[in-house]
Length: 266
Image 1 (cartoon, rainbow, N blue to C red):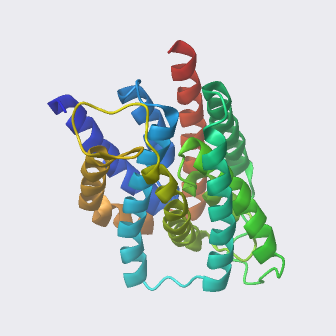
Image 2: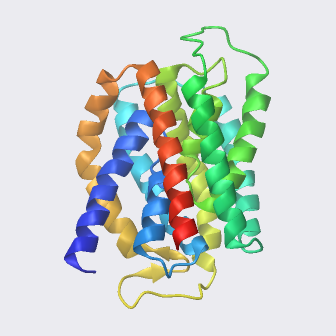
Image 3: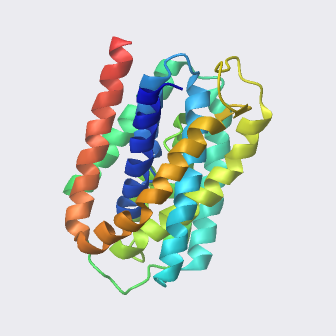
């Protein structure tokens, strides 16, 4: 790798951790367009696999901080939603090998665009203490849908799950990031084996690659993510939930627009 590429990937790692810790969206939504731009010869499945692995690494770092902060979540709900996400990720992963790139890009852009608008204009219910008994099943089906899009596009799930589970009355704003980080690890691991066990049609002339995952890119991004983790948690503690939600919507909309423009001009 040349110096410019290394610097860009380090900056990506920092932004990935910041987005994961503050917004709970994992950074895959950021990594997919960047990898798509930096490595135009990569098949979309390789971009998705590498992005998903980066998301898992960054989420593990954040979970260590959330554990220290003693943020409480409903483990039963988290496991149920993760189960739905794993099934969705597997379905999306397998479907990606049978769909044209234009369809995968269309799913990426449409999903992010709709979620961005929903997130920006959604009225927060606040810290509602009433737990909807239907949230478990409803959340599982939402995560099944989100996981299928994540497995197909490599978004990572958090960018989809954060707005989706944010609609559930039993989930408080400060719990969204811990929930989605747990789910990104569990759901991501569910599809990682599939990516690692398949033989890709393309290999870089440099770097360490196993199946569809380029671990040279993953290692560089995750290590730089670790360096930023302490600052990310400080920003998370300062930012108000409503402002964070609107910023998340604007970021998703900007990335969807960018991905569409890059694909149309490629």
